[in-house]
Length: 447
Ligand code: TRP
Image (cartoon, rainbow, N blue to C red; front, top):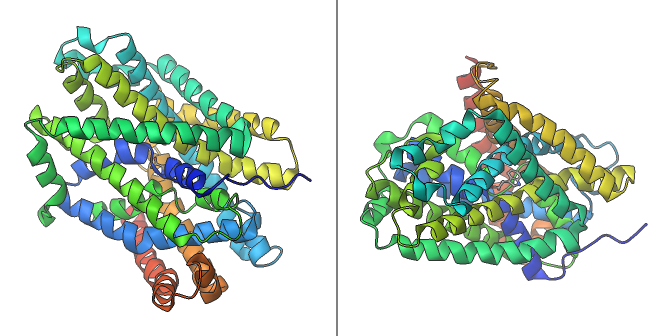
């Protein structure tokens, strides 16, 4: 058997883990759910979730991967025992990976389509009305969506095929710094827009009126989604870390990068929204409607548009590879099948599953399960059930099963204060908070 692949150094790992965390969740989803939930108060709850629940679970996942040197199902066997019941967390995680990547790739496809339209200068020739109906037109065009979904999946597959070092690490090293640079550029640009101050106010003033219990649930679910938690992506990435490396600081760095990108994307997008008097609560189409409209009005707008959608494609791709890696790592390890075969087969299955989401906006738009299209069902089921449930058990496994020794290692030595904090969170705070949320969610959905 060949030795397990490892990241070259800490920076390579930080880039890969931030690559997983920073994605469509930050640039597309965070701004639009902030908009549909009325702004500031939602942001505050999201930040609290990241700090109190997200980071501790991130540390737990990293530790589980690193100390077992195994992917998502087997890690629980190595750390507990053969046929440990905890390994169901791994099965749940694998299922979540299929579901999430299937709709994620469809949205990735929309982004590629917008990148293509920017490249050929389509937006520059159009009126505002035409621009804002672009996404709607794409929704009505199953063939075009399936084509882009295919291209996005093929790109994901081709990176994962090459393995941890030559694929994941290499691409993250190029794409992540590129993404940060482009985002900083856009942020600086947005400062001089008329809507800039209003955007800050919208995001950072805590107007609790607009907040609903459903909004709180969404904030909790999103804090898992945005940090790639609850299904073993971080376990898998952690398993490529050398055993001696301390991980807590790394987890905090990734948490900060992820949060900073989400907030920066929010500031830029809402600055545009308010500059043009648009609706912050437009929903999933927010990013796709607001930005092209702004871009065409700029002197070098076409170039900005090309850069922006390129940025979002990068972010999406560095996340989608982490989702696929969860499944591929498991299969490759467990069944000893070649990485190439596993990656392609998994890619094909996920592509097929994703067709249900791509067709949700047209052919299958009337087909609903519990009132949701496939797209919404996969999205909601994963971020509001699979990930929180997975995260809850991961926290408990870390807190109760592995205990203070694990915390000590994760923190890189004896740090009683931090260690106690981490144990408190993993044993009680995270499970209770997330548990209440899940029960409440079940009650709301099934009453
Ligand atoms: N975190 C990514 C985003 O914000 C999406 C993602 C990648 C993810 N891997 C994951 C979400 C694992 C949940 C679990 O876009």
